[in-house]
Image (cartoon, rainbow, N blue to C red; front, top):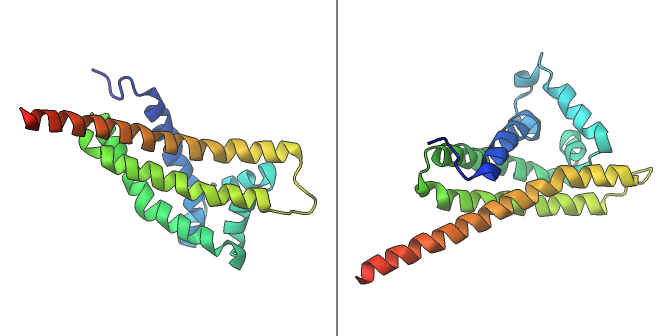
Length: 172
């Protein structure tokens, strides 16, 4: 039986999210010598330039206005990334013991995106964002809200079913 059978969305998420986290999001908390002589800073700057991204730009600037983001990046690297790796392994092995971890991962990841979207909607760059820039920003951030939120709901539903079956067996 192939891995991730019937879980195409999970496969897509895990192939997409890990590289984005490692190659883009966490750059601002990596030691500078890790990035030296690599194309990663160019990728970061390119991503910012697509739509004058206030989140990545704020993270790069070190501005006090974006100190809150630094804590989310530490959360992403210290909690979400390990949960991501363990969860991917568990889904690959079809091990249901990772469901609670994936519920926590999905809820944590979705929660961190809400203030990021708020920062996008309240940013006041000069000149103002164009419609294309707003659409680009939303298309970059909304999937990272909806997919983990969907994962959290999916894992919650699965856990409720598993607990229900266990309770039924206990009554027999």
